[in-house]
Image 1 (cartoon, rainbow, N blue to C red):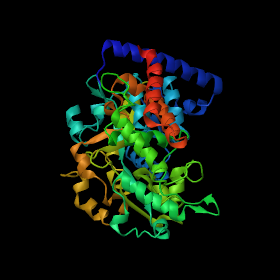
Image 2: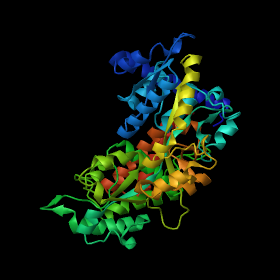
Image 3: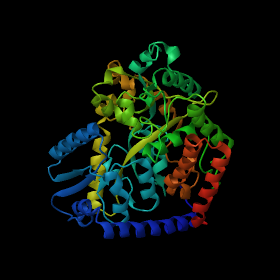
Image 4: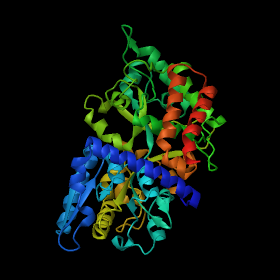
Length: 475
């Protein structure tokens, strides 16, 4: 993401505002004090003696256990290194802590947060001294899925590495299908496109949706009320329909014909096909857990959510996974969401190097990621002559794990993906920095369209005008 001098000045103005806000939060509330106290001192570590790293990670239970074991193994191999591992509110604390000059030595937050930190100058670039198997950044990139690292390139360097690839899939609750008189083992009853989701979801909701006047089950529903997944779903739908939020010229295009088509589909799901009642529970909130609690017949599935499925003891045997629906008549696009490893540019050089060594160690522990469907994007491993998903060991595992039998490895290997926050959706550096604000304005329009029944084109035009107003700060 190369930037002109004008773009850099604009980003610096946003950076100043964000730092000021972060400092006010830290000083006035003390919410981040505990985590920063534990991280404090990493930037001034002694250049001799033991190395102490602070590592913040997201809180998927399975990933936490995997990380803890990796830390224990790394410390056993490197007795001079101690890694303090934290997950408590790490995602919420990450940006304010980094803006305030604190934060951990290394972390694995969502990709969009990493990109912001990179663009605003808070990160340390990948240190190739920690990756002796690679001579250049080009060599490093060649070990990953195509285009995996392009989102983290700036000024001729790479500033982060994707921890896993998470792509959407479709969860089907076989029990609810059977209750509605639809055999889930009949492929004709499993949707492959959004029209079929509407038709099948509508049949299910009509057949079993209500009991004594109360909504009990739903066929399909969207996320509402500022759920963080709402942004992810909107970005996925926009990508599938060839729509964007901002184009490469900086024009706001959330009311383009493609965007209107995307939001019309979302509206039709509820108003035309009547797959759910968004004003009722389930559906109104906590949709992901409602899916795993057996209240929704079809839902969006993410590989990182496998632990939720396993935890849902009463319904896990009823759950079947298949490919995510796509629009009819359009080139199939694979939206990709990542958490990504990054290193704090405020840490000492010694800690930065050790942090990258640990990250290199983590990228080579691919087997567990592979069988949980989280998909390690470093496909070429030191002990393999082929990509890990073509290895004999993995092919044997595929026969056992439903979660990875339909994983789109071929599409990923071709690089035909759209990242959750990237230039295909947000067009310019300034827009990437404001991606969440932009998406939330479109979310407001989506809710007016679905919950109130407003017309699609005028609602999206209003959203465009609102986005243009917030972008004026960068003019």
